[in-house]
Length: 94
Image (tube, rainbow, N blue to C red; front, side, top):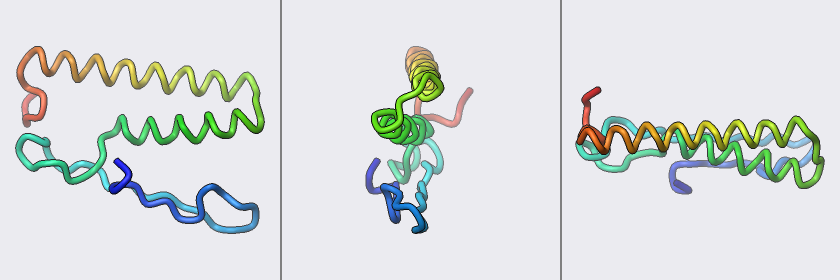
């Protein structure tokens, strides 16, 4: 995933601009090869950042966000497993 994520000025330094850009996968991997990151990679990136914030500034709200991002990753994994079981993962099929 790292080659598809461009972080500038990260971690943030107060008063300085920081940004992140993601190259998102275009088309199914089996048809187009890996050419970007998946949505779950973006969720994982966000979770890592919130976990870092929570180490410095722990609070209930951060912990809830981490739990919900874990839940999102769980459902994305279930979706992928279901698509694999139906032999449509990586294809332009529902």
